[in-house]
Amino acid sequence: MPNVKRRGAAALAIVLLAAPVAGAQSALARDTPRFVGTWRLVSDTQTGIMIYDGLGNMAAQVMPNRARRKYAAAEPTPDEAKDAITGYLAYFGTYSVDEQARIITHHRNANINPGQVGDDVVRAYVFESNDRLVLTPAGSTNKIVWERAR
Image (cartoon, rainbow, N blue to C red):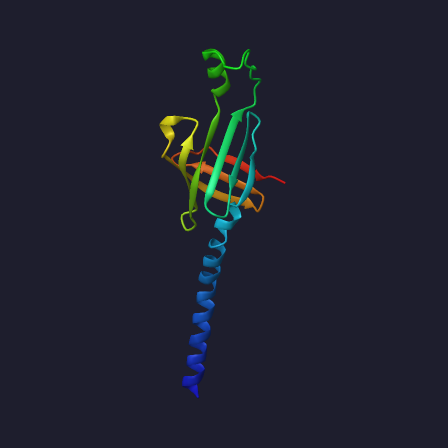
């Protein structure tokens, strides 16, 4: 009988020790679907929207909160075009999530800035809640806060 008790105690110990690891893995596995939806930038100086779908596609647009002149004619002058695009960010592509490292990467297929087409944008992420996402660019301490659009 003592062997049975020892085996039972050993099995219980294994289950109890493995439970936190299994729980952590299932918690991590829930991050990727949490991105899916529409997010609005939280900022006093910019406005923006970011969209993730369940197929791995994404799009982002951010622009400064400032008055922009309307074009005087159908085609903008060089100064009007420069004023309209200054501070504007827009791209779309796909995304991938490394849940263990807590990193999301935007793989840009198109971009308003032609020099950034094909570039990857790497961000650390933290879900402060189901409706609040904080992204931190690689190599930066700048935190970009997004709230789920309702």
